Image (cartoon, rainbow, N blue to C red; front, side, top):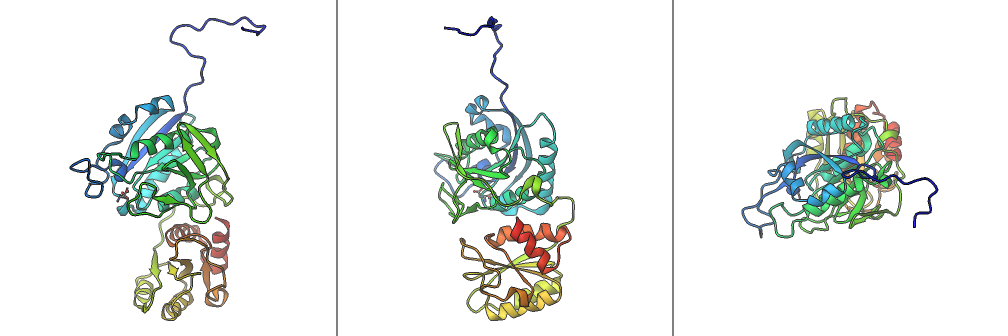
Length: 348
Ligand code: ASP
């Protein structure tokens, strides 16, 4: 029974009272989600980044009930070959789209190999609080039980959801929603290939339902000082291991790198020959950041190495690949002294 006091007007045929669906831009960059193999049972001998965005979307008819999709093919690369100029193109395009009233959120389809680097780069540079969600797949589009279509549907579902706003850049993968800062690839083959070690996912998405279970604490997007308009400084990563020599460090310094991230053992401890080479590099003005090769946990400042005395910076809980992203942005923004860089690593 209608208990309303105002007269209810009949709805003309073809019209709905429901608000229009959110408008989500889907930016495709390639990866296994756009991969194709000679037969459906083949999940490793395929070519990444060959299926176009229109075909990816056509495989997921359910998208039309979730959002109005605006597709764009930004690139068609295997993300092992991701490079900084493409990061600049992608980030600037996202900013342009999100600055308009026509776009409510962005989904980026990407390869899994470097997804955690691109996601963190965007987390630190996108200038909007509208949702940006990356997704990918472990099996090519041609495979039996391909995981890409559901990951894409879930990513659009998250990007279209009001609760995703202001959370920074997100990764929707295998029903989980991760923060770009925390997420890492942890399997070479499994469909459940992404984790946020120590800290866990932010939430989950399933059957159209989105639930966040925690928020993001560190600064990102609108609260980040970083932009994509400066030149990329050369920053490389070296690893500490039994018997490592100083050859790589000396070669990098001679080549003029601006920064070196060391993937140390344990709590960012460094073999003594490597540590001496890094101390020499720091004296010559190269930024040296200590991370860990372990894959979870954090590196304590002045813990396994005397950062204050050696002029080193601790990466905290960032893995070496994410630490490199932050170090490049920080150097490009003019932070060069160890104390200033440590402040950056304590903030983002
Ligand atoms: N090599 C692929 C890529 O990163 C792997 C993947 O997407 O799963 O583009």
